[in-house]
Length: 175
Image 1 (cartoon, rainbow, N blue to C red):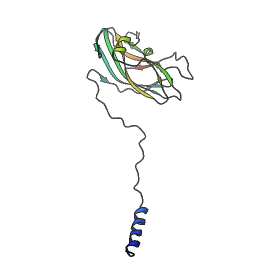
Image 2: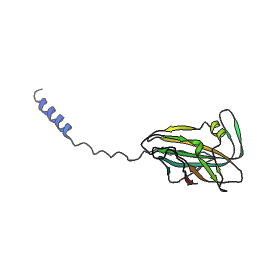
Image 3: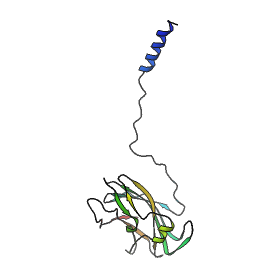
Image 4: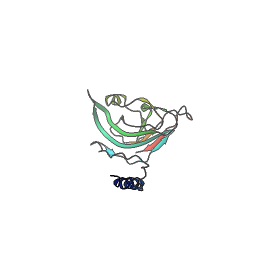
């Protein structure tokens, strides 16, 4: 037993002193899994655009929708529904009061359309909310535009910030 003790001590020391395997560096970006595009939607590959402290990334577009269906009703369009899927991120140092009703869809004849309030309610999309520092939110916006028009631009308003309390000037994103 006394002869085994030095051998055990040597084994413990050798195993404890072995060099640790080199670790791989931590990734510098989040690896989000890809998701299937909805059947009536076209995936958009547009660069992000900023308005104030809010970054906008448009990821999906559906146009020409004759109606929408919610949990309790089907709602026909006066013209056609247009749906944009977007991701917004607060890149500033404080929160931003974000208002979905300010986001305007500009059609091919230059008319600017506010989101369709009933469609937004039926599809249970957010209205006005506090977008905290570093927070990212993904949601849909709906508009009802004339059947003979095409959506060409989204005019976005990120919300009041410390440096721009009125947020009067939007940023246009070509579709």
